[in-house]
Length: 88
Image (cartoon, rainbow, N blue to C red; front, top):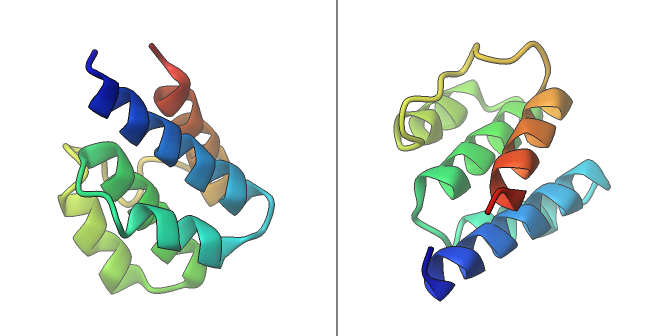
């Protein structure tokens, strides 16, 4: 994995941690700067949390096969995204 990939994963993990801590704005600010499937997935989750289903579905389309209804709740989905971001 390249250092650029590591950097993206690190930013994705930072975004998820911010979201789990309740800082939607910070999390959104991080992922909207990234154009990578993991970041798009997190972006989709954030819009799901916000209640913006249309925008959420748009970001799911860019997230490499993940879907709006794949997870029962947003928190468990954020934790799944964090686990993926933390994978080496």
